[in-house]
Length: 484
Ligand SMILES: Cc1cc2nc3c(=O)[nH]c(=O)nc-3n(C[C@H](O)[C@H](O)[C@H](O)COP(=O)(O)OP(=O)(O)OC[C@H]3O[C@@H](n4cnc5c(N)ncnc54)[C@H](O)[C@@H]3O)c2cc1C
Image 1 (spheres, helix red, strand yellow):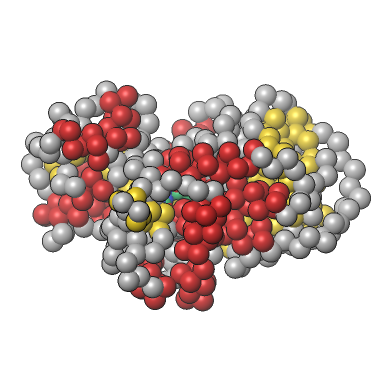
Image 2: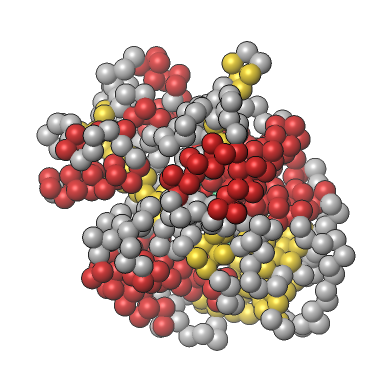
């Protein structure tokens, strides 16, 4: 099937790109491996999206992001800080009318860790869900965007040194089918699901990185995986407990219900994200426990239910009443800073292939991400990738491919093996020895897959291996990459 553009991923970056290309008259095929358009990291974002504070400027935002990321690409960051907030205004506020919280007529701007002023737009603690609902409704009205849910991308098609399309498998099918377009945008999100503790929902297996690597796309910063200190330790999953809760007075306690953060940092419970994550793991190791406790039940329960309605509801669904009891929490893989290297138009080094959002590495975040800048980056790269695809680009590739059989090589439990290995050896605290072990074992698993067939495991195994290799190859601790 031939389109003008293929987009893989229906999160904020993929959906905004589809929206813009659709309005420009492109015939777009938009794919998600999931059942609903909203099954993505984007819909799970709680805190908000960076906009502009009172007396704010691109310079101030630049310095805040640079302080967190340390090794940011200065040119990419400069463009981002000048242009990205304008996209929030143009697309989210004016065009989609996203109902960000207001006090009287003015936006209610939140302050988050690492920001020098309140500048975060939010919709209570469900910002991602609301943005994505408005965007999905707008997309529905654009008839030349064809949405394929439960369609998994397996491999990019390269022909004459150009990406000309992608092999797609419908969830239940044993076959993959080729889809062609002169431009493909990878918007497949993060890698959290490669780790056994993660805040990320199901699709986040980093498959876009594996696919891009397979056809020779340049990758960068893969070792920089950000771990969030507090995810709810429940039997269902690891639901994110926002840092705003510690901002509102929540405290961390050890197994004997004693505070411990004072032993690790002068800012105690409000120390930077990576320091709190490391401290919690160290404490768990000392006490030989599988979680620590987060306590906010000393606060007024009506206030807590009003301030954190979504977190309250989600904790209740998992059997915890945060207004009455302490919550068991554990650090969890949260955000991937690294990815497919892109320029300011989302272009990779492979002609016809662009990347946007969390799967891309634009250099903006350097070695660590500042809170609430990732939705902004997803919007920014999605918009730029879509705006910069030339209209006249209509290349017939002349390929005539039929369907191909898809196989599964390992038992489904292979994913658990990989997740445990990644958590133990490529997690919050890394060492040369543990990283070497991970590289060795992951490369052994990957090499068992015959290259001539499609295997559902190929992409996530390749991505896990490449992250471990990047972490092993960089002995210098910086940002969220910490080697003992
Ligand atoms: C719990 C949580 C809270 C967060 N809070 C915030 C916040 O407050 N502010 C902020 O700025 N950021 C936040 N983030 C990070 C932010 O949500 C993400 O970085 C951002 O939404 C990524 O958007 P995306 O479009 O790149 O990818 P996603 O939104 O993750 O979308 C990825 C898409 O790719 C599809 N996909 C993946 N692989 C395949 C495949 N092989 N074939 C077909 N489809 C595929 C998925 O189905 C999905 O549709 C949070 C993240 C989480 C998990």
